[in-house]
Image 1 (cartoon, rainbow, N blue to C red):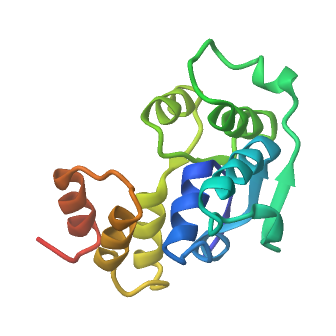
Image 2 (tube, one colour; image 1 turned 60 degrees about the vertical axis):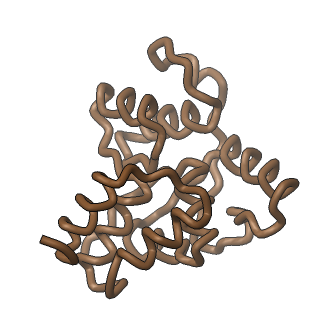
Length: 165
């Protein structure tokens, strides 16, 4: 399986970490870049929940500096600094895939021609690659950790995973 490079946002790392499945990222993507701005957001998260993942401790993460000058090249937007840094990093380094869950961030990335994958897409890729036997327990775990998932999207992910018709 060819692994594409990925720039990950906070939510992807946060939620995969909370369900104990951050290992899916290096199994599916290589390299995995994390902007310093995202690492700082996760640092803040550890003040609330000590079990929040620290990307600096993951040997498969490449921490990258994304200067404000790269962020300033993006079209006007109201995204947070984490999402902005992910998109700017992907654009500056040659249209890398972006790991984003935020709808507005995904929309901007797609407008810029970037391949987008979110937490749910990563679970589906892992299922299709045979890395995980089922997505339903992982979806349930995500929801228990506060991941918001509309019932129709939950059903669609199960259908795409071949776990429901």
